[in-house]
Image (tube, rainbow, N blue to C red):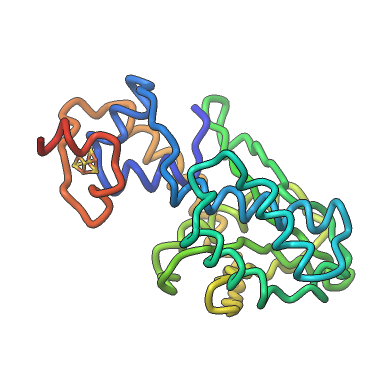
Length: 226
Ligand code: SF4
């Protein structure tokens, strides 16, 4: 099984949603908020690969990519402008290892840890900076502790020559970096964590609905509560 943070997150928040999405493989269309986040990420990837120089380049790129999508309308365009106008362009001149770095790390013969990391920078001979861009409207860092631990494990496996990894969850709306160093001892627990959660996923039979704060964004909401 390929195990990602979003798969685990869905499992933890609602078993029924997990069942629909990952067992029945039902179509979960991208909503406008998800599409907004995807385009912002694409703009920031392009900012590096196309070597944008100014924040106006970012905004122009957003407008270009938003054409014909659900977010080509006033609230989202204004929102994107605000986000892009405070993006620290100087960071793009860092020594970047990769943007949109895709990892697939074997945990056991049957389990791979998979994910995409927004940006990896070299800080010095020993240290990497792992950046994840967040477009959230709240600084809900505690929701992402597990994501940091999984990414830290993946980068340790992918780049063992770097002894230190700084995880930076950068909240674009607030122009705020939240940097954490995950202790090495956490890495020892990740393998067991993955094995146990996959075991639970494979053995689940009840698929309980869990009404939660994200039900309003869930494509299953009418089926669940309609
Ligand atoms: S609407 Fe809520 S309870 Fe129903 S599947 Fe979605 S998250 Fe679960």
